Amino acid sequence: MTVIDRVKFDAASDEVFVWKYPSENLALGTVLVVNQSQEAVLVKGGRALDVFGPGSHTLSTGNVPLLRRLINLPFGGRTPFTAEVWFVRKTVKRDLKWGTRSPIPLLDPRFNFPISVQAYGRWGLSIADSRRFVTRIVGSLPSAGADKIHDYFIGEIVQRFSDQVSEFFLGEGRSIFQVNAFLDELSLATRQALDRQFGDFGLEVINFNIERISIPESEKAMIQEVMGRRMEIEELAGANVDRAYTTVRTFDTLEKSAENPGGGAGGGLSGGLGVGLGLGAGLPLGEKVGRAMDPGSGSPADGPDTDPAEKLRRLGAMLEEGLISQEEYDRVRKRILDEF
Image (cartoon, rainbow, N blue to C red):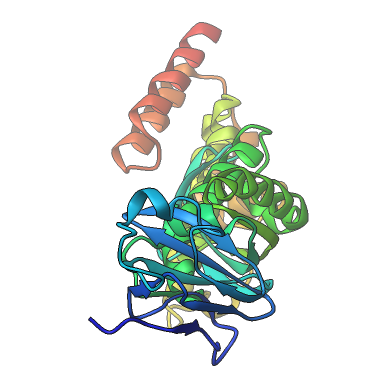
C-alpha cells in the first residue's frame, strides 16, 4: 500500500464545489494543503473527523484527536490509516439556472379552472457548513460540481416553488394570470422556504429569482372560450332565455363562418368575434344577425317574452345542442318555474 505524503487540490474551474481526493491511503505525518477559499473535511467510515481551513496541516493525533481511537498506533511515526479527504469550495456561486421540467398543475381561484404553469429563473448558493454538507449530501459521489448539486436540489426547488405559488394565489384568491405582477414577492417567499430547507444540508441560498412564469397558449385559448360561454350562460341565468338563445346560436354561426374564409361573412367577421367580444355589443348584433338569417323569427321586442313554456322549449333546445350542461339546465329551469 502506497502511503500518500501530500494531499492537495487545485480546482481547474469554479464549477467544482466538492472534490474527493482519489486515494484514501494516508498516514500520520501526511501533509494536507488547503488553498484559499477551500476547506478540507477528513472522513472515515462515513464520519467527519475534522475540518481544516486554508494552510498546510500535518495529520496527527494532535490535530485529529479521533484518530487515536480509530487506528492502531504501534507502527511508529508513520502509522498508516485509510480515510477520505473532501475538498470543499467556499466561494459563492450566483448564476445557477433552475426551471420546471414539466408543467405544474394548479386550479385558478378566480376562474375556477385547472391550468398548468411553467417557470424558470436563476439561483445562487454557498456551502456554509462543510462538515454537514459532506456528510448529508456528497455520499459516494466522486465529485460534486454545480451541475450535480443542481440536479440533486432541482426537485426541492420546484416543490418549494409549487407550494408558494399555490399559497400565494389560491390562498389569496388571485388569478394565476396576474402572476407576472408578483414575481418579486413570490421570489422572496420561495427563497425563504428554500433557506429553511437547504440549511439542513449546510447550504446557504444567496439569491433566488423567478424570471418568468408562463401558461401554455392552448390553455389560455381554452379558458377564453370557457369564459365566453360563461358570459352567455350568465345572460341565460337572467331568465331572458329568448335573447340568450338567439345570442348563443348567433355566436355559433359566426364562429363557423369565421372558420370558413370562403363563406361570405367569415373573412370580415373572423377578426372581431373572438371570446373578447362583450355581451353589451354582442346581444344587439346577435339579434340583428339572427333576424337577417331568419326573417320570420322576429325579435323579443316584437312579442311577449314571458311565456314560461316557450322559455322552457328554448332552454331544452340549448341542452340538446350541447350549449349548456345538465346542471345549468336544471338551475335555469327551476328559476323559470319559480318565477311563474
